[in-house]
Image (cartoon, rainbow, N blue to C red; front, side):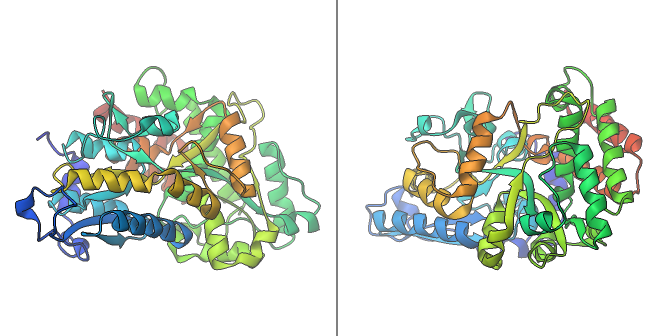
Length: 434
């Protein structure tokens, strides 16, 4: 087995190693049968972990029900973990030999660390119809030409806004960053928080750095820094992006106490629902939250892409998005054929159609019909995009991805200068990226 990364080793030292794995059960029967023959009379159990709520949780439940009907002697034990706790819990479970048979991830560098540690099943030669997947999404879980995850959703990161507030204040959708800044001043004068933000988990604020770096310098900035083919993470573009973030903070563009508010608590979303805040840069899951938490707000809800930065090199059609969920199987599962069969059900056209109809997100699977207006818009943006940037913390090795979130968090808290944040990232990148 290859050496487990420093990030995973540190996670193993967590005081919650045992308690974090409570709720999942190891298969106790069928051990003599070889573990993959659903036609035997023995009861077989598969552990399945994911991080979604609301409609998406129900969608997975429907897929599992279909799977269990096709395999009547198989029981799927479902564990749902809140998004902000999920990563650490899976890391601890993997490190402690308590990983679920099938688990959700975001692909990219986060999944790759488990692949390097020989923890994930190679799906390349399994009975899977790979041609049905959108290539760019499937490639997010391909390492050394081998496939380790199957994508279901593509969640765009975009601005959501209150159309009623915009109309009442004479505002149009901002096409440029200068227009966005002008909107912020108008909204502040009318006692409305311009931008809702719950940045305690750090990833919500990181969207700003990703988009600003892209709009200022283009998609090559991250690619060069990540692949070590040009400028690094101390490139002037990242310094400039940090300055833009701190300008927003100093303008009081965000709600008070934003760096201490957990996203999962729903406080920032409530600011949107109650007309206290006008805009929020968030994942496509926000549509699902609205429909689950405050469906009346959907009449006011609008979306727009991150605006262009005047003089910037970035194509304004560039989008940031996550491939989520991506389903994988632990390498040492006792029931590999059944685990793969569950993956196939979770990525079937029937599941994908249900996902499109009910989640407000684009799917990574071909052959579905799109009727939801938000999904139509997001699908058009994906099809027209010059490039798609996956999240840094899911693309980079975990230790560097975590530092990216930490330094960006400090930028928002004014605890670190843009130069210091960029230098810290580049120093760690030189240690990790070869």
